[in-house]
Length: 96
Image 1 (cartoon, rainbow, N blue to C red):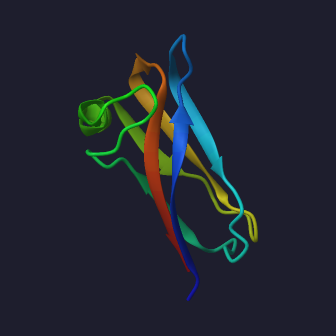
Image 2 (image 1 turned 180 degrees about the horizontal axis):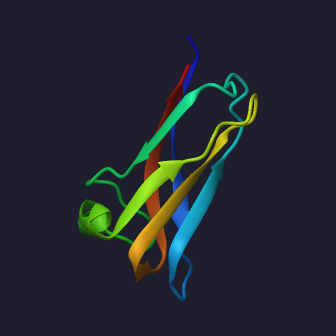
Image 3 (image 1 turned 90 degrees about the horizontal axis):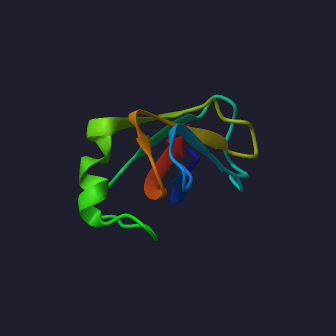
């Protein structure tokens, strides 16, 4: 059973946006039928958001993962009810 785990940075930009995405690449063992998941940890930080900001992220935004591309990776998408700015750290995992 193959699997991968890591972090990525999702960026809503400096002017704000309701949607953002980040491509997770370099996953040579991932298959087109693998399952991927993304989430925000409440104690994570980023270059412009505190742990407190990360704790409340899911009140305003959600995360979903696109279908994997074999031997490559997948995309993490975020949509928010509010305009978000800056970068948030997201964690991800995939497995077969």
